[in-house]
Length: 348
Image 1: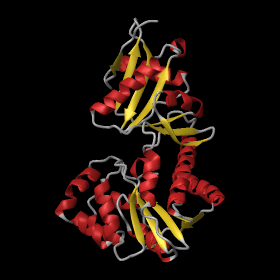
Image 2: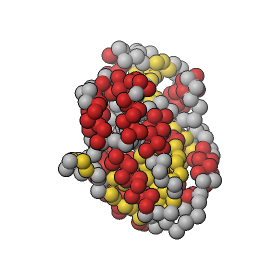
Image 3: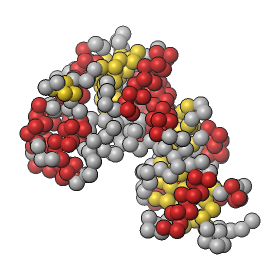
């Protein structure tokens, strides 16, 4: 068997990147838009015969040419990517794979967290990572007949989010608020979390949680082995539900609140799936109509657009005073600059 080496592929290497695109397509994989490192295995003619990539703490877009399968090349790719992640200080690693490939990655040291049959398996390199996360969550469990949860990205925290939290809190004994801790938003996690807590400090039956690595955003859910965008959304929704059901069991949650977003195709599909499947697990799905201002739905996208265009005073009627004060202060200048420097701040 030939000996091959694994090398980093730079974005400027047009030849290798073109071959990677062709290899992935030949293996039924679309190249993911979210990648921050790519490697390749080359044959004697310097043609790409295997590849893999990373994004944050996830391994993605891994494939071996069908002509070279069975030569151990995927083991080389995974080992290289794991070593690369370790060298940059990331030790808890995740991957998403087809159900048919889960056993293979299990043999390479990854453990199944949850799966959606015929769609996707979510895996990590720690045997007890998810169970430890659930164990930590269970320490915050409180008694009560009605225990609810909601998941917020809050990019940034608006009066719409506040309305949703207030409604859920008023209708339940305990409300678990999960704040998406993945830093893929224009407003950093530490700021989003602080603004959520500040904007809901008048409510006294809330328990706040970081989502950790187990609940991720639509922006970074991998799309590379799904046939189209709708399939990606459905896979993400179903995977999120499998994880959420486990979280609900740990905390005794019997209701999940979500905001209606009629303009968002993603949210529409997501809410439809949750409405159908959460009740199967004894969890009520409550879709709350969005709060409006002047006949217009309050949207975090509109807040970001106003900030981008320098219309800071206009957001005052769209966000809690604590959110406005942050952006109006010198402390918020870096985030404002980040928003203004982004081409498109409207997310659909």
